[in-house]
Length: 421
Image (cartoon, rainbow, N blue to C red):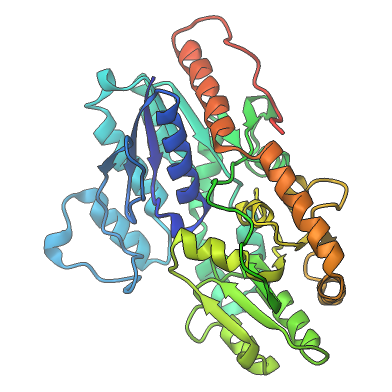
Protein backbone atom coordinates (compact mmCIF):
# COMPACT_ATOMS: atom_id res chain seq x y z
CA UNK A 1 0.00 0.00 0.00
CA UNK A 2 0.98 3.62 -0.57
CA UNK A 3 0.54 5.24 2.84
CA UNK A 4 0.45 8.93 3.80
CA UNK A 5 1.21 9.48 7.50
CA UNK A 6 0.19 12.94 8.73
CA UNK A 7 1.43 14.67 11.88
CA UNK A 8 1.29 18.37 12.70
CA UNK A 9 4.50 18.15 14.78
CA UNK A 10 6.68 15.09 14.86
CA UNK A 11 10.08 15.48 16.50
CA UNK A 12 10.49 12.46 18.82
CA UNK A 13 11.77 14.55 21.73
CA UNK A 14 8.62 16.68 21.98
CA UNK A 15 6.40 13.77 22.96
CA UNK A 16 5.02 10.36 22.13
CA UNK A 17 3.45 11.38 18.81
CA UNK A 18 6.88 11.70 17.19
CA UNK A 19 8.04 8.37 18.62
CA UNK A 20 4.90 6.70 17.24
CA UNK A 21 5.41 8.21 13.81
CA UNK A 22 9.04 7.16 13.52
CA UNK A 23 8.68 3.56 14.62
CA UNK A 24 5.38 2.88 12.86
CA UNK A 25 6.67 4.28 9.56
CA UNK A 26 9.85 2.20 9.78
CA UNK A 27 7.98 -1.02 10.46
CA UNK A 28 5.41 -0.36 7.72
CA UNK A 29 8.28 0.00 5.24
CA UNK A 30 9.72 -3.23 6.63
CA UNK A 31 6.43 -4.94 5.77
CA UNK A 32 6.79 -3.78 2.16
CA UNK A 33 4.55 -0.69 2.18
CA UNK A 34 5.46 2.66 0.64
CA UNK A 35 5.31 5.32 3.35
CA UNK A 36 5.43 9.10 2.94
CA UNK A 37 5.27 11.29 6.04
CA UNK A 38 3.65 14.72 5.76
CA UNK A 39 4.67 16.78 8.79
CA UNK A 40 4.76 20.28 10.09
CA UNK A 41 7.74 21.50 12.13
CA UNK A 42 9.49 20.38 14.26
CA UNK A 43 10.11 17.75 11.60
CA UNK A 44 10.57 14.07 12.46
CA UNK A 45 13.60 11.85 12.58
CA UNK A 46 12.86 9.07 10.09
CA UNK A 47 14.57 5.84 9.19
CA UNK A 48 15.88 4.89 5.74
CA UNK A 49 13.13 4.07 3.28
CA UNK A 50 10.60 6.54 4.74
CA UNK A 51 10.07 9.70 2.67
CA UNK A 52 9.33 13.10 4.22
CA UNK A 53 7.24 15.87 2.73
CA UNK A 54 7.65 19.01 4.81
CA UNK A 55 4.49 21.03 5.29
CA UNK A 56 5.77 24.51 6.21
CA UNK A 57 4.26 26.64 8.94
CA UNK A 58 5.33 29.75 10.83
CA UNK A 59 6.67 27.43 13.57
CA UNK A 60 5.52 29.85 16.24
CA UNK A 61 6.44 27.63 19.19
CA UNK A 62 9.94 26.64 18.18
CA UNK A 63 12.89 26.64 20.52
CA UNK A 64 14.57 28.83 21.59
CA UNK A 65 12.04 31.57 20.72
CA UNK A 66 8.47 30.32 21.30
CA UNK A 67 5.60 32.77 20.72
CA UNK A 68 7.83 34.65 18.33
CA UNK A 69 6.79 37.53 16.06
CA UNK A 70 7.42 36.51 12.42
CA UNK A 71 8.92 38.95 9.94
CA UNK A 72 6.44 40.22 7.32
CA UNK A 73 8.17 38.30 4.51
CA UNK A 74 7.49 35.01 6.34
CA UNK A 75 3.75 35.28 5.72
CA UNK A 76 2.91 33.29 2.58
CA UNK A 77 -0.89 33.16 2.61
CA UNK A 78 -4.04 33.70 4.63
CA UNK A 79 -3.52 30.50 6.63
CA UNK A 80 -0.26 31.94 7.98
CA UNK A 81 -2.09 35.12 8.98
CA UNK A 82 -4.79 33.10 10.73
CA UNK A 83 -2.15 31.07 12.58
CA UNK A 84 -0.36 34.17 13.85
CA UNK A 85 -3.55 35.98 14.90
CA UNK A 86 -4.75 32.89 16.78
CA UNK A 87 -1.45 32.73 18.67
CA UNK A 88 -1.80 36.41 19.56
CA UNK A 89 -5.14 35.67 21.20
CA UNK A 90 -3.61 32.83 23.30
CA UNK A 91 -5.02 30.00 21.16
CA UNK A 92 -3.08 26.96 19.90
CA UNK A 93 -3.70 27.00 16.13
CA UNK A 94 -1.28 24.32 14.86
CA UNK A 95 -3.72 21.39 14.46
CA UNK A 96 -6.28 23.51 12.61
CA UNK A 97 -3.80 25.24 10.29
CA UNK A 98 -1.84 22.06 9.58
CA UNK A 99 -5.12 20.40 8.58
CA UNK A 100 -5.81 23.16 6.08
CA UNK A 101 -2.30 23.04 4.64
CA UNK A 102 -2.01 19.28 4.29
CA UNK A 103 -5.49 19.01 2.72
CA UNK A 104 -4.31 21.47 0.09
CA UNK A 105 -1.15 19.43 -0.52
CA UNK A 106 -3.03 16.13 -0.79
CA UNK A 107 -5.61 17.54 -3.20
CA UNK A 108 -2.94 17.27 -5.91
CA UNK A 109 -1.85 13.76 -4.85
CA UNK A 110 -5.04 11.71 -5.17
CA UNK A 111 -3.56 9.20 -7.61
CA UNK A 112 -0.34 8.74 -5.59
CA UNK A 113 -1.75 7.34 -2.33
CA UNK A 114 -3.95 4.45 -1.22
CA UNK A 115 -4.69 5.51 2.37
CA UNK A 116 -4.18 8.50 4.66
CA UNK A 117 -3.37 8.04 8.36
CA UNK A 118 -3.73 11.10 10.59
CA UNK A 119 -1.69 11.12 13.79
CA UNK A 120 -3.70 13.15 16.36
CA UNK A 121 -4.40 16.25 14.22
CA UNK A 122 -8.18 15.66 14.27
CA UNK A 123 -8.76 18.91 12.40
CA UNK A 124 -11.42 20.04 9.93
CA UNK A 125 -8.88 19.44 7.16
CA UNK A 126 -9.13 15.69 7.81
CA UNK A 127 -12.79 15.77 6.82
CA UNK A 128 -11.81 17.62 3.65
CA UNK A 129 -9.24 14.90 2.92
CA UNK A 130 -11.94 12.27 3.20
CA UNK A 131 -14.21 14.29 0.90
CA UNK A 132 -11.37 14.25 -1.63
CA UNK A 133 -11.84 10.49 -1.80
CA UNK A 134 -9.00 9.24 0.40
CA UNK A 135 -9.59 6.30 2.76
CA UNK A 136 -8.87 7.85 6.17
CA UNK A 137 -7.67 6.34 9.45
CA UNK A 138 -7.04 8.52 12.52
CA UNK A 139 -4.98 7.78 15.62
CA UNK A 140 -6.04 9.59 18.80
CA UNK A 141 -3.53 8.71 21.51
CA UNK A 142 -5.82 10.18 24.13
CA UNK A 143 -8.30 13.07 24.21
CA UNK A 144 -6.51 16.23 25.38
CA UNK A 145 -9.62 17.02 27.43
CA UNK A 146 -7.91 15.42 30.42
CA UNK A 147 -4.87 17.68 30.04
CA UNK A 148 -7.21 20.66 30.03
CA UNK A 149 -8.97 19.57 33.22
CA UNK A 150 -5.70 19.05 35.09
CA UNK A 151 -4.14 22.30 33.90
CA UNK A 152 -7.23 24.31 34.84
CA UNK A 153 -7.37 22.66 38.27
CA UNK A 154 -3.78 23.74 38.98
CA UNK A 155 -3.88 27.21 37.38
CA UNK A 156 -4.47 30.45 39.32
CA UNK A 157 -7.71 32.21 38.47
CA UNK A 158 -5.92 34.95 36.51
CA UNK A 159 -4.55 32.39 34.03
CA UNK A 160 -7.64 30.27 33.53
CA UNK A 161 -9.13 32.40 30.73
CA UNK A 162 -5.91 32.13 28.70
CA UNK A 163 -5.77 28.37 29.33
CA UNK A 164 -9.34 27.92 28.13
CA UNK A 165 -8.43 29.83 25.00
CA UNK A 166 -5.30 27.68 24.49
CA UNK A 167 -7.39 24.51 24.63
CA UNK A 168 -10.13 25.89 22.37
CA UNK A 169 -8.95 23.56 19.57
CA UNK A 170 -10.65 20.75 21.51
CA UNK A 171 -14.07 21.93 20.33
CA UNK A 172 -12.88 21.31 16.78
CA UNK A 173 -11.39 17.93 17.65
CA UNK A 174 -14.58 16.76 19.32
CA UNK A 175 -16.69 17.74 16.30
CA UNK A 176 -14.27 16.07 13.88
CA UNK A 177 -13.86 12.91 15.96
CA UNK A 178 -17.62 12.30 15.95
CA UNK A 179 -17.54 12.30 12.12
CA UNK A 180 -14.47 10.13 11.63
CA UNK A 181 -15.12 6.70 10.14
CA UNK A 182 -12.26 4.82 11.76
CA UNK A 183 -10.22 5.68 14.87
CA UNK A 184 -7.20 3.89 16.32
CA UNK A 185 -6.07 4.38 19.90
CA UNK A 186 -3.43 2.89 22.13
CA UNK A 187 -5.28 1.56 25.19
CA UNK A 188 -8.69 0.57 26.49
CA UNK A 189 -8.44 3.54 28.85
CA UNK A 190 -8.06 5.94 25.92
CA UNK A 191 -10.86 4.18 24.06
CA UNK A 192 -13.25 4.80 26.95
CA UNK A 193 -12.13 8.42 27.32
CA UNK A 194 -12.46 9.19 23.59
CA UNK A 195 -15.97 7.73 23.59
CA UNK A 196 -16.96 9.69 26.71
CA UNK A 197 -15.26 13.06 26.20
CA UNK A 198 -15.65 13.36 22.42
CA UNK A 199 -18.98 11.53 22.16
CA UNK A 200 -17.60 8.99 19.68
CA UNK A 201 -19.32 5.68 19.00
CA UNK A 202 -17.03 3.04 20.61
CA UNK A 203 -17.69 0.73 17.66
CA UNK A 204 -15.45 2.84 15.38
CA UNK A 205 -12.50 2.79 17.83
CA UNK A 206 -9.87 0.06 17.65
CA UNK A 207 -7.16 -0.49 20.27
CA UNK A 208 -3.62 -1.15 19.03
CA UNK A 209 -1.08 -0.79 21.88
CA UNK A 210 2.27 0.85 21.21
CA UNK A 211 5.59 -0.94 20.82
CA UNK A 212 9.01 -0.60 22.41
CA UNK A 213 12.11 -0.11 20.30
CA UNK A 214 14.73 -2.85 20.52
CA UNK A 215 17.38 -0.34 21.67
CA UNK A 216 15.83 -0.43 25.16
CA UNK A 217 17.78 -3.22 26.86
CA UNK A 218 18.94 -4.06 30.40
CA UNK A 219 22.10 -2.31 31.63
CA UNK A 220 25.55 -3.85 31.44
CA UNK A 221 26.89 -1.73 34.30
CA UNK A 222 25.84 -1.58 37.96
CA UNK A 223 22.98 0.75 38.80
CA UNK A 224 23.72 3.91 40.76
CA UNK A 225 22.80 3.44 44.45
CA UNK A 226 19.89 5.65 45.49
CA UNK A 227 19.20 6.94 41.96
CA UNK A 228 15.52 7.54 41.15
CA UNK A 229 14.51 8.35 37.57
CA UNK A 230 11.38 9.95 36.17
CA UNK A 231 10.43 10.73 32.58
CA UNK A 232 8.26 13.71 31.68
CA UNK A 233 8.00 14.88 28.07
CA UNK A 234 6.53 18.16 29.34
CA UNK A 235 6.83 20.17 32.55
CA UNK A 236 3.09 20.15 33.28
CA UNK A 237 0.95 19.29 36.34
CA UNK A 238 -0.38 16.17 34.60
CA UNK A 239 3.03 14.48 34.81
CA UNK A 240 2.86 14.44 38.62
CA UNK A 241 6.44 15.65 39.07
CA UNK A 242 5.49 17.79 42.08
CA UNK A 243 4.18 14.74 43.94
CA UNK A 244 7.47 12.99 43.27
CA UNK A 245 9.52 15.99 44.44
CA UNK A 246 7.67 16.04 47.74
CA UNK A 247 8.22 12.30 48.18
CA UNK A 248 11.93 12.72 47.41
CA UNK A 249 12.15 15.54 49.96
CA UNK A 250 10.92 13.07 52.61
CA UNK A 251 13.20 10.27 51.40
CA UNK A 252 16.32 12.36 51.53
CA UNK A 253 15.85 13.02 55.23
CA UNK A 254 16.63 9.35 55.92
CA UNK A 255 18.87 8.19 53.06
CA UNK A 256 21.10 9.30 50.20
CA UNK A 257 18.98 9.70 47.06
CA UNK A 258 19.36 11.39 43.70
CA UNK A 259 16.40 12.23 41.47
CA UNK A 260 17.06 12.49 37.73
CA UNK A 261 14.21 14.13 35.80
CA UNK A 262 14.26 13.63 32.04
CA UNK A 263 12.53 16.87 31.08
CA UNK A 264 13.19 20.52 30.35
CA UNK A 265 11.77 22.61 33.21
CA UNK A 266 10.11 25.91 32.44
CA UNK A 267 12.56 28.61 33.61
CA UNK A 268 11.28 30.02 36.89
CA UNK A 269 8.21 27.79 36.64
CA UNK A 270 6.31 25.78 39.25
CA UNK A 271 8.79 22.90 39.28
CA UNK A 272 11.86 25.05 39.86
CA UNK A 273 10.03 27.05 42.53
CA UNK A 274 8.99 23.87 44.35
CA UNK A 275 12.57 22.53 44.26
CA UNK A 276 13.73 25.74 45.91
CA UNK A 277 10.91 25.62 48.45
CA UNK A 278 11.66 21.99 49.39
CA UNK A 279 15.40 22.60 49.50
CA UNK A 280 16.20 19.60 47.28
CA UNK A 281 18.18 21.37 44.57
CA UNK A 282 21.34 19.50 45.54
CA UNK A 283 19.79 16.09 44.84
CA UNK A 284 17.66 16.83 41.77
CA UNK A 285 19.12 16.89 38.25
CA UNK A 286 17.44 17.66 34.93
CA UNK A 287 18.44 15.94 31.69
CA UNK A 288 17.11 16.73 28.21
CA UNK A 289 18.15 16.65 24.57
CA UNK A 290 20.06 13.37 24.88
CA UNK A 291 20.42 10.63 22.26
CA UNK A 292 18.53 7.33 22.36
CA UNK A 293 21.70 5.52 23.45
CA UNK A 294 22.24 7.99 26.28
CA UNK A 295 18.60 7.66 27.33
CA UNK A 296 18.83 3.87 27.47
CA UNK A 297 21.99 4.12 29.57
CA UNK A 298 20.29 6.58 31.92
CA UNK A 299 17.20 4.39 32.28
CA UNK A 300 19.39 1.44 33.16
CA UNK A 301 21.36 3.41 35.73
CA UNK A 302 18.46 3.94 38.15
CA UNK A 303 17.62 1.65 41.03
CA UNK A 304 13.99 2.74 40.84
CA UNK A 305 11.97 4.68 38.23
CA UNK A 306 8.73 6.54 38.89
CA UNK A 307 5.82 7.38 36.62
CA UNK A 308 3.72 9.61 38.92
CA UNK A 309 1.41 10.95 36.17
CA UNK A 310 -2.17 11.90 36.89
CA UNK A 311 -3.12 10.45 33.51
CA UNK A 312 -1.50 8.70 30.53
CA UNK A 313 -3.10 7.51 27.31
CA UNK A 314 -0.49 4.73 27.16
CA UNK A 315 2.80 5.81 28.82
CA UNK A 316 5.48 4.64 26.43
CA UNK A 317 8.25 5.57 28.92
CA UNK A 318 6.77 3.04 31.33
CA UNK A 319 7.15 0.25 28.77
CA UNK A 320 10.64 1.45 27.80
CA UNK A 321 11.74 1.38 31.44
CA UNK A 322 10.32 -2.12 31.78
CA UNK A 323 12.40 -3.16 28.76
CA UNK A 324 15.48 -1.87 30.61
CA UNK A 325 14.56 -4.06 33.62
CA UNK A 326 14.23 -0.95 35.78
CA UNK A 327 11.91 -1.47 38.80
CA UNK A 328 8.91 0.82 38.75
CA UNK A 329 6.55 2.74 41.01
CA UNK A 330 3.68 4.04 38.88
CA UNK A 331 0.35 5.83 39.29
CA UNK A 332 -2.86 3.89 39.12
CA UNK A 333 -4.03 6.30 36.42
CA UNK A 334 -5.20 6.18 32.81
CA UNK A 335 -3.63 3.33 30.83
CA UNK A 336 -0.62 2.81 33.10
CA UNK A 337 -2.14 -0.26 34.82
CA UNK A 338 -2.77 -1.77 31.37
CA UNK A 339 0.89 -1.35 30.47
CA UNK A 340 2.36 -2.85 33.65
CA UNK A 341 -0.23 -5.61 33.92
CA UNK A 342 -2.86 -6.43 36.52
CA UNK A 343 -0.93 -8.49 39.07
CA UNK A 344 1.65 -6.00 40.38
CA UNK A 345 4.52 -8.23 39.30
CA UNK A 346 6.04 -5.57 37.02
CA UNK A 347 5.47 -2.43 39.14
CA UNK A 348 4.09 -1.08 42.41
CA UNK A 349 0.97 0.99 41.79
CA UNK A 350 0.06 4.01 43.93
CA UNK A 351 -2.77 6.53 44.03
CA UNK A 352 -1.98 9.48 41.72
CA UNK A 353 -1.09 12.60 43.70
CA UNK A 354 -0.60 10.74 47.00
CA UNK A 355 2.82 11.76 48.38
CA UNK A 356 2.80 9.31 51.28
CA UNK A 357 1.99 6.29 49.11
CA UNK A 358 4.72 7.23 46.64
CA UNK A 359 7.23 7.78 49.46
CA UNK A 360 6.40 4.40 51.02
CA UNK A 361 6.57 2.50 47.73
CA UNK A 362 9.86 4.00 46.56
CA UNK A 363 11.48 3.56 49.96
CA UNK A 364 10.34 -0.06 50.14
CA UNK A 365 11.84 -0.85 46.74
CA UNK A 366 15.11 0.90 47.54
CA UNK A 367 15.39 -1.35 50.62
CA UNK A 368 14.72 -4.61 48.75
CA UNK A 369 17.29 -5.49 46.03
CA UNK A 370 15.84 -8.96 45.48
CA UNK A 371 12.37 -7.60 44.74
CA UNK A 372 13.86 -4.95 42.47
CA UNK A 373 15.62 -7.66 40.48
CA UNK A 374 12.50 -9.82 40.19
CA UNK A 375 10.33 -6.85 39.22
CA UNK A 376 12.76 -5.72 36.54
CA UNK A 377 12.94 -9.19 34.99
CA UNK A 378 9.14 -9.50 34.99
CA UNK A 379 8.78 -6.11 33.32
CA UNK A 380 11.12 -7.06 30.49
CA UNK A 381 9.29 -10.34 29.92
CA UNK A 382 6.01 -8.47 29.60
CA UNK A 383 7.43 -6.03 27.07
CA UNK A 384 8.86 -8.82 24.91
CA UNK A 385 5.51 -10.64 24.98
CA UNK A 386 3.15 -7.70 24.36
CA UNK A 387 4.77 -4.56 22.98
CA UNK A 388 6.34 -4.94 19.53
CA UNK A 389 6.44 -2.21 16.88
CA UNK A 390 6.23 -4.90 14.19
CA UNK A 391 2.95 -6.10 15.72
CA UNK A 392 1.72 -2.48 15.78
CA UNK A 393 2.52 -2.12 12.07
CA UNK A 394 0.79 -5.40 11.15
CA UNK A 395 -2.39 -4.43 13.01
CA UNK A 396 -2.31 -0.90 11.58
CA UNK A 397 -1.88 -2.18 8.01
CA UNK A 398 -4.93 -4.38 8.57
CA UNK A 399 -6.84 -1.27 9.64
CA UNK A 400 -5.74 0.44 6.40
CA UNK A 401 -7.13 -2.47 4.39
CA UNK A 402 -10.48 -2.12 6.12
CA UNK A 403 -10.49 1.64 5.41
CA UNK A 404 -9.80 1.02 1.72
CA UNK A 405 -12.52 -1.63 1.52
CA UNK A 406 -15.00 0.71 3.22
CA UNK A 407 -14.19 3.59 0.86
CA UNK A 408 -14.57 1.33 -2.15
CA UNK A 409 -17.93 0.06 -0.93
CA UNK A 410 -16.67 -3.47 -0.51
CA UNK A 411 -17.91 -5.90 2.17
CA UNK A 412 -16.45 -5.36 5.65
CA UNK A 413 -12.83 -6.54 5.61
CA UNK A 414 -13.08 -7.77 9.18
CA UNK A 415 -14.32 -6.63 12.54
CA UNK A 416 -11.96 -4.32 14.39
CA UNK A 417 -10.05 -6.09 17.13
CA UNK A 418 -10.63 -4.09 20.30
CA UNK A 419 -7.63 -5.30 22.30
CA UNK A 420 -4.37 -6.49 20.79
CA UNK A 421 -2.72 -7.28 24.13
